[in-house]
Length: 336
Image (cartoon, rainbow, N blue to C red; front, side, top):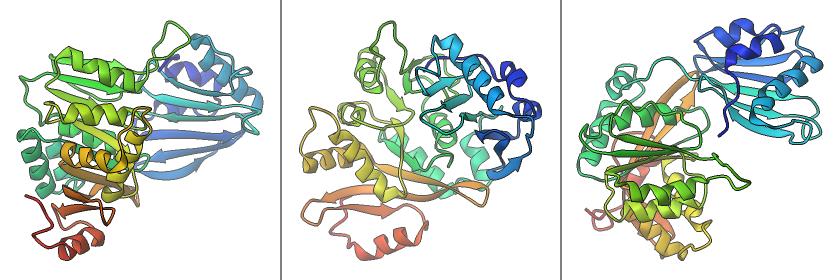
């Protein structure tokens, strides 16, 4: 993803938002149009008065962000970029939107360890131990959740559980992960010197040539899932990725569906078998009433092709669905 000027450079173009752009407690700034601003603090949305923020100022801000990228909002009304401070910015301008809309997702100054998340009540200790055992056994973890649920925060914490003397190759759309390792290679999608951008799928394939012990994909969205599953099933255990999903079980179906988007996709049942062989543990994070926490954890045991369902085992009490799953599947159905 291309990089625009830092958040500090935006203050002259966004009157009334100067304090927000400097406030470390603000994780997201959402501008819906002139004088219509919302912010997220501590997981809660609240309006922010900005009477001086006019349509003209928003157009100027959009141009200021787009110019370093060699882009023109008038010609390209939808724009995604990364600011110099690591924040992500999404812009939509007319005619794709009635007014200029700008959303800035900021990243806090602190990275939380797994122990921090346990202490804060975001990660049950039983789930942490299951994750630690899974990675130590060179098996793989899928983190699922909705937008802003804390997937990246949990992924950062899990990366710290990987052995210090082993090599990590991390692949992201935007460099958000905080990986403090000497032997870590980081790839970012979107970079290009021509009209053809580098895709996540290109980088997953390329990563295998850099001798990774562990592969970390910031988020799976499409056909790159097929290549990732191939990698997970051919000697790159102890790897991690995230995916958007409503719950832990649907995350498995989403992963399989993404893999099916590949032009050379295998049949559905074969793909599902690849998911079972490639993913051992699913951790689902959620955001509720201002809190972000791991809501569910499922061990992936098998796929029942005849019934079209995943056979899983809850690692922790979790949700009602997980408890029901534990009751309905007999030991014969659950593969060790």
